[in-house]
Length: 132
Image (cartoon, rainbow, N blue to C red; front, side, top):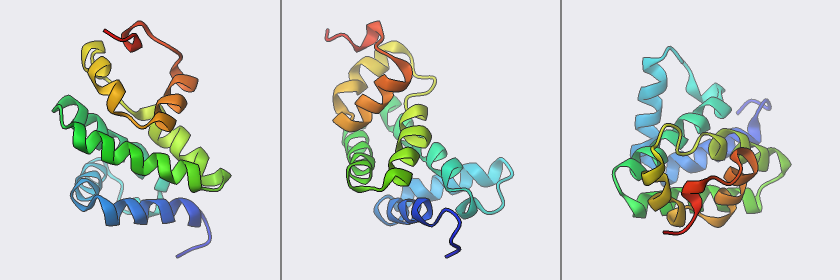
C-alpha cells in the first residue's frame, strides 16, 4: 500500500471487508463514471459509498442504514484526525443527498449519533429533523 492516503485506504479496506456487496456496487458506479482505479481515490470512494447508505434509506432498509452509519461512526470515534476528516467530509456531508424531506425524516433516527452530529454541523438543523 502506498504511503499516500494510507489511513484513508485502510478505512476503505475495512468497509470493503464488512460491506462487500455495497463495495462492489460502489466500484461499479465509479467505473461507470471513468474512475479506472477507485482504490487510489479513497475520498471519492467513501463519497460514493455514502450513496449506498442513501439507497438503503430510500428503500427503507433501516438495518443497512444503521449498520453502515454505525460502522462509519466507529471509524470516526476510533480514528486519527485524518480518518475523522474522511468520515466527516466524504461520508457525512454526502449522506442523504437528493432524498426528499419525508424520507430524511424517517431515516434520521436510524443514523448513528456521531454521523447525525457531523451532518448537522455541515448542513445545520432543518425542519424535517423535528420529531413527528
